[in-house]
Length: 164
Image (cartoon, rainbow, N blue to C red; front, side):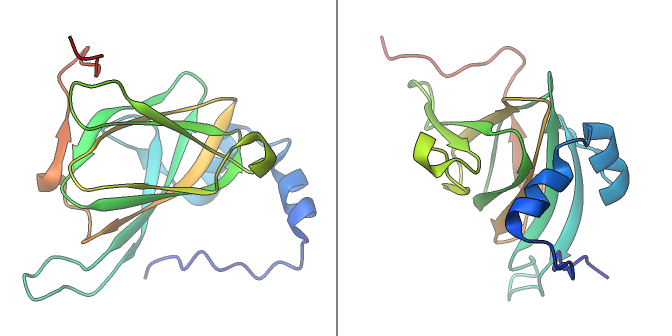
């Protein structure tokens, strides 16, 4: 059965943030049962929706953790993906249509500093991410559901570049 992610804690949001302050990436990986992900970092699928008429899950969700020095390498998927910030340091999410310069979104709790709690990556868009601190925990929701057959990793060393 998938983990609903719904907590039963009576903690206030501030207490919840403080609860993560002393945790290390290894603690989060252990507590959530995360495994190595092919694009970098660690993950665990938490939800797979019922299949649509084509047999593909209507949506899927994962926990995804990047520790300092790890990155989600440039890749793209064949479905829309929503990144949701949960805990830890802010995360830099880079997006590119192709060979043009990438856009950057910082996911995190500090709205006043321009950080956002979620970001949407359209289907087929190149994306890469890295934690801006010791570790970052996010969830990624993909619709229609994620399939490794619809996942493409960029060649080693590929980076989007400015036109010209």
